[in-house]
Image 1 (cartoon, rainbow, N blue to C red):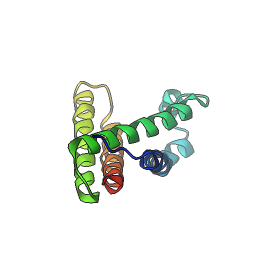
Image 2: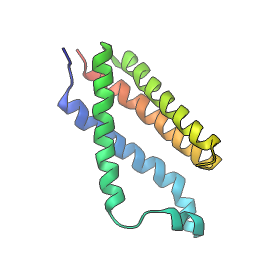
Image 3: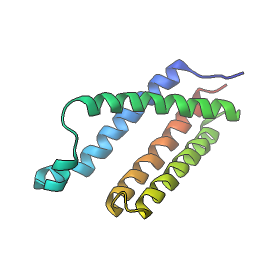
Image 4: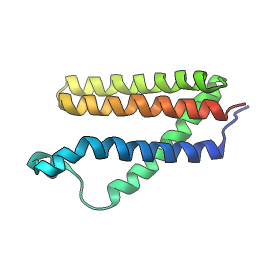
Length: 131
């Protein structure tokens, strides 16, 4: 039987948004200040990017909760391991994209740093909410 906590999903979604806001604000602040034309051309305009980011945060939290529950792990350390595994799989997907020239080295490092950390944190959080 699956044991998924709604409170855990909400907390995970909020954790994802707070972490992402801090992570990308710090990393991208220098690009905005310098007036980097390439960055400004690639950035999406309008509020839709924020709506998608919020949806992504809660869907990601739900998926991690589902994986933690399906694996039968309990506790923060076990959940942390599941989250790290998910982050590692995502890293390999980004590595493939990087090797085929779909993203720069800098974008690759930014993306994998973000996903390794946030999915590890989500795994730990959902491990804490399992019985």
